[in-house]
Structures are given as C-alpha cells and as structure tokens.
Length: 362
Image 1: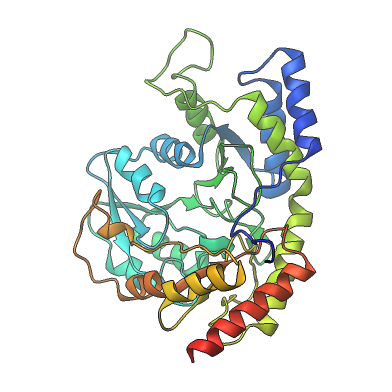
Image 2: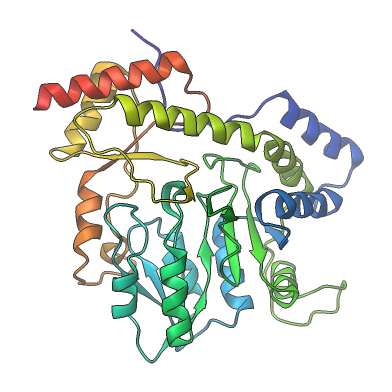
C-alpha cells in the first residue's frame, strides 16, 4: 500500500530545534529579544516595512487589532461567513456584531456587491479574509469603504506573501493579521502577527497583549496576556527564512495540478495577484464527501473541507441568511495536499487519483 499523503504537514527541522535550544540555553523564555527580532524581520519581508506586533495566536491578533482600532459594542463589522469561525469570533469578542456577507464564487473571498448591500448605519468596518492564500478584491472593497466612511481590517491568516500588483496583503487596511498555527504556510508552533498601518495602532496592540503595560506595573489600559514567547519567535524566525522557497514549491505544485487535473474545477486566480496556495481548493460538482472518501480509502490521499458549515449557521451564531454562493461552496470545496512535502512523485499520485475518482463518478 502506498504511503498516505496527508492534507497538511508542518515542517519542523533541525534548524528550528537548534533555535529553540539556543533560547532555552540563554534562560530567557518569555517575550524578549527573539520576539522583537521576529517582528522586525516579518515586517521587512512580508509587510512592506510596516510595524509588526507578535501575539500568541492569530485569533488574538484579530481580536486585539480590532480593539486597538476602537471596535466595540454597538458597531458592526462585515465579514465572510465562508471562513474559519475565528474571524467572526474576534469581532464578537469585542462586543461588536459580525455581519455576514456572501462570497465571490470564483475566489471564495468577500463579494463586494454583497458587502455594500450589508452596510447599515452601525457598520464600522469591513474585514475581508484572503482565503486559501488568494487575496480578496481590495480595490473594490476600498472603494466601498471610502464611499461609506468605513475602515478596513485584513484577515491574512492564510496568506503569507500573497499580493495584489506586488503590494503584499496585510498592508491595505488599518491592520492585517497573520496566523502562525502549525499548518499555515509558516509557523511559530503557535502565534499570530499583526502588521499595523500606524504606530498608534501598534502601540495599542502592544499594550493589550501585555496586561495594558508598556512599562512594568504602569498599566495604562485593561489588557490581556497575549504575548508570544521567545521560544515560539525563534521557530518563526527560522521558518521565515524558508518561506519563499516553500511558497515557490506550493505554486509549482498548483501549476502542475492546474494543467493535469480533470473532472474538478481548479482554483481561479485573478489577474495581477500572487496566490500563495495555503490550500489548493477544487470544486467537486457531485458528492464531494464521497469523492474525498474514495481518495482516502482507495488512493491514500488526504484532503480537507474548509469549510463545511458556514459561520452564520454555526450554533454560536445561528442566523437565517440568504448567502447562496457561501452555501454552494460549503457543499463543493475540497482541498488537496499542496504543502512543500508534496514532491514530484506525490504530485503525480494525486493527479492520477483525482482523475481516476472523477472518471469513476462520471
């Protein structure tokens, strides 16, 4: 039986282990010089020089970014329903209300027309998600924001290095949040990073992550313990040096799939964008779950469904909304392995398996 190809596979090697050992040997484990260096390096490589602030998770990054921008009770923030629940959760945790809009069926990102139709007198901001590593339509969303006097925040959790016309995601809004969870395009073991459009926002996030303190025992605001440790930052710094190579591998694998896959709808890529393929997500017209089961059981190919239940239908929100593109995507999407461990042999196996299952179901 062939070796199982997992849908995701974190890559932690000797370099990361050596970095952790270095921190442990130094005795400084909590937030310190490694975090500061990681923030500077991340900003220089991925955020066009924007000031970056590291926190202990992507969710914390979104939550603290929203708070730092003044989002709170009585306000609404427009978000996609077709994403991981953390996006809407972060809004709800501020006391504001997440308002769910539909998606563009090609990119799976926020549909500008649905966003504009969702605006009310309480709308404070739009928070697009650059889903699967494909940027949202920031030009159209910015035009809507300008027209209605709204702010833009970016959920770039899955989009390290994605860009529009060479401008990196995370630099379009007041802040952009990147996740550093193990299965993302790069990891710190766990963590998040906020790129900030102003020093004021960056300072507020720093206060909020550290119990409201910039100076010890001089608590300026009520804050959280959302600090990143130097251990996690050391891992992240190593991973950052490998990200460009890994991204190239993902893009090469995606190009191979684009050319060879049959019987499924391959990912759309808008003109002028850099897609970093956190996921390579196809659409299966009929019996997506059966398709996934056949890939696993008959061909030892792992897949993922991101996301089977739209956020607005989760028990935590439980709303009755008409979001047809969201509902259709939740029934059809299937993500194939595209991580850097997928080499030439694995690419061929995946193509062969997908095409065989598609043909059998035709």
